[in-house]
Length: 340
Image 1 (tube, rainbow, N blue to C red):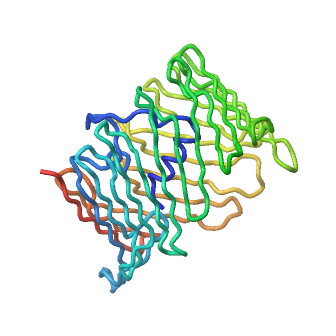
Image 2: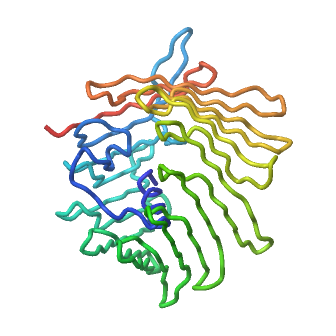
Image 3: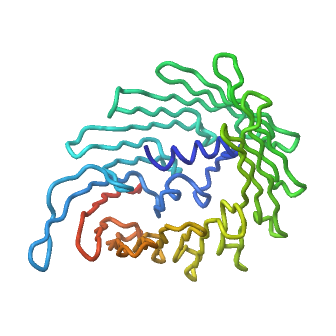
């Protein structure tokens, strides 16, 4: 549906999303979307672009494609996302999310509706302890109910999560920490004892993740691989090798940054395959994607997409034109409303 769905599901898997603060200087949903200022709503609309001689004009409205969406995001004054709607080009709502927060600024209810298919829905209810940390998530849909039960230690760290459906524990996650509260071990089990995935981590003196050793138990084999992370003196990730099977088979990511700390360029290179594609993304100092490219190893031509922006007085982009090989593809227009 949208970015926040992935964020919440990721939070559940990693035992996080424990606290929400009302201070707008802290991260909130609006800042997660890369928005500046006290944003009330963002309406995005996608249009085709028609080439005419050495210029182009705006054409018909288009359906969403890739990361571009016809959408309406609404936030409360604390920057929490309270409503998200995605639309087809004809104006029909395809997907909808609503969220409710309590007076402590905690997410307590969430509803997802898929209008594109059969009108399926998911309801989430979040329960917290006295330290504002998640202890239970109840999920219900058209024909099922599921509970994520989270157990915490004396330091309020989540150490165990059980996924329960029809009074049966289907998945169990167990976490362990070092003296600096770094999660050094994650174990996933089917039911309560059949191993699915085991992760062991080491951290450096700055409590930054340095290495992961992973074992996955598949039906056809047991996979062993590792991930290695390297940082600069500003604690920014500059080099990552992941899915390392051996010294010659792995994926590599190299990052560089602007002076303001925003990501400038990221290069992904698969190693050890006869055929591979090198992918590069470049960003401006606002953190907005300005170029994306793919270079296959088999001699096929390089593909390049570029993005040009217009910004408002809050430095939020209100217009983005997408190009492929310098030819205009589409335009995304955003109308942003702010709290007074």
